[in-house]
Structure formats: structure tokens, C-alpha cells
Length: 123
Image (cartoon, rainbow, N blue to C red; front, side):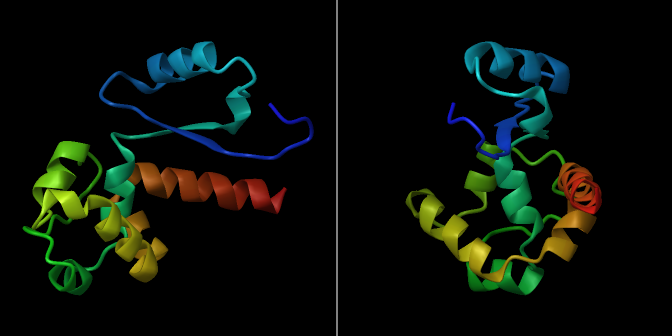
């Protein structure tokens, strides 16, 4: 709600449909601009996991590498952790080795978002 501030707002789709989720968030946050709102399919954990290589998954002790992360849920991500209590730590470690190129190949929603960002920057 700060005037003249630039931002992107992300929300998880959570299986509710993109348009339904957008409407719910726009109703909840009155100052939210539709142009700044982006819905992640299904959940943000899928984007984190998408940018993690097979080697990094082994190093971080994440179980059962999954190639396509487009429908990965928070619960499925959680099940890949050796210790669920390490969730925040593991997510921060993923960001340290994150590959945007890999994430684009492994997650349709991230690929669409990245294309949107590139096109917006070109304008």
C-alpha cells in the first residue's frame, strides 16, 4: 500500500484454479494490482525444487528426485526432506545452488513466469 512502490505478489494456486485464486487474493488485499499478481501452480515449493539439480538433491539429502515439478505440492516437497523440521534450512540451501535454467525446464509455471519477466523487462 506504499504509493509509487514496485512489487510482484505471488500466491499459490492450491488446486483452486488460477482465476479463482486471483479473485480471492484481489478481494483479500484491496491495494493489490492485478498486473502485479502472479499465481504459482501448484505451490511455491515446486519452484524451489525445480531449480535443484539431481546432484544438489543428493547433497541436501532430498529423497526421490522428480524431473517434472509442475504439480508438486507442499506435502510432496515435505515428503522429500530427510527431516521435515529442516524445511526452512533446506529451502535456503536450495537458493544457494538454484539453477533458473533447470527450473524453466522442470516447471511450466516457472517457465511462464520467467518469460513474463523477460518480456516485461524488454518493454
